[in-house]
Image (cartoon, rainbow, N blue to C red; front, side, top):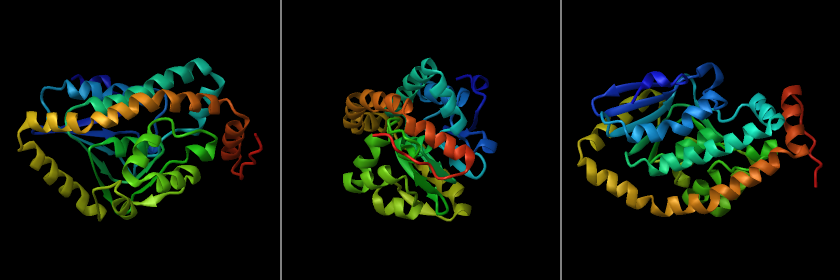
Length: 264
């Protein structure tokens, strides 16, 4: 794997454990343009990396990932062809994570929002700092959670609770995430690195092939759900991206005011 090809993601090897860090702290590791494209190929490259068996995903700075970028949303709205490309990338992100047979550990050091939350919960196990929050505000900007949230959130936390959080965009804490079944464990931020290192080492000491085959087997229903839902979700997101309410949400964000939604 040629790490130099990636401009927005950093890599560090620790034995057979590969630490993958979203590395745009000044942007709270939001995904837009190059970073979104790189994320869409990342897990296909990682599965072919012969020098690693366990993947740990985290974010630089104070956020895991803030998800999307509001200015990028405007640009995609103005350039529909680019939105179609972004849709293809979104499908690759989800499929790449589900098809990567190496165990992926999410080390959620800070807030995981929107696509950031999707990436976190599509990892195989999730450990988070107690200060981290999770949320998916797609609906707040006139979009739907077509990038995969509609798959994993109901699957992990139940449909009634998932609908509430996906409808409202409300955030929940890492401790709540444990209660909901979204997070394996939450702990003080100062303890997170050591805890994840120890867990990764535990997995790395286990039989590699059986771990991979176990993950591949467990993920069969998730891959089936992704195959049946991603096209629908991304199609609706495409439609919603052209709506007046989406444009109003972007304008309200820029102008620091409450949006006024009125499309029916």
